[in-house]
Image 1 (cartoon, one colour):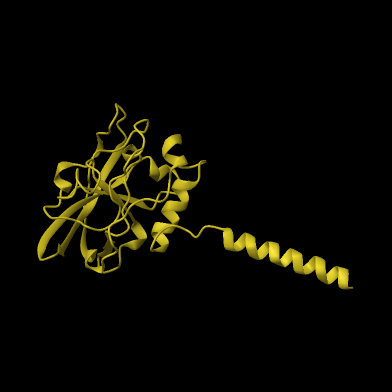
Image 2 (image 1 turned 90 degrees about the horizontal axis):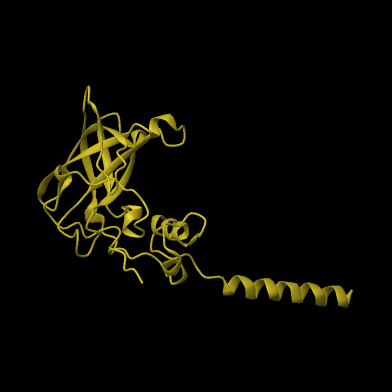
Length: 205
């Protein structure tokens, strides 16, 4: 009996040490932690091998509730399908899904939200909408090609409003690795103010 208790106590000590030695998830919010976990995972990370080896988490602006806004959604009727420019010769098919009007830091802002026609054929992504934007931090504190935000069709409320959380933005994969082909942010989706929220520019090693 004493031998069994000893073995059990040693096992519990080993488990305790193992759990204490486990590194906590990187990030201030659940969104940041999940994004960091994804980029740390070599099987799905866009990072180059040398950047992955030195990866200690993505850089974000300080979380700021000022950059969580209610936007008025207006559906774009009979929008034509068009080929969206990318960083390569690839031209994926998109449609303008609607317009988002909101006020941020006292400024009236407008962004066009898009729907990938390829995603419509994929049950997993058919409800995803694509919101790319640039702002006055682009090319300095944030990635020059702009940042992205995912919005779901189900996020649009019956009163045609949708919450936009600029703290939950991400960079296109091209910001980390030029082997990827990424949609270019349309010029009309530039915000004439600084969005100091969400993901920052990535410092490559």
